[in-house]
Image (cartoon, rainbow, N blue to C red; front, side, top):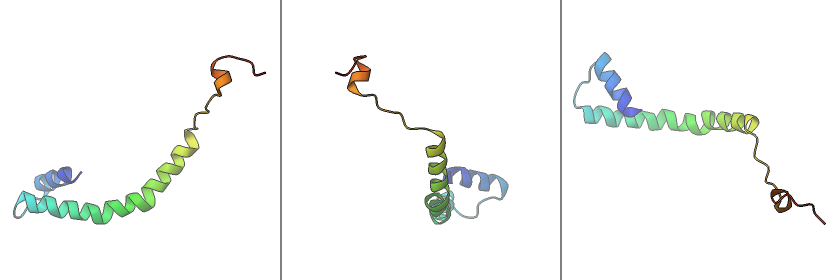
Length: 71
């Protein structure tokens, strides 16, 4: 995503200086903004939604897998 941000910025506004420094600045801003957002907001919400809508598979017992009646 940082490469996309640098390319988009260079197309729309232009980059002063080297592309490498612009890329490092973008990576730094991504770490400052996107990582906490992922850990504190987006991650817990998506984890909650996934656990609600995707049910865990039930493990069948050995007898059920082999179609045997217990006893």
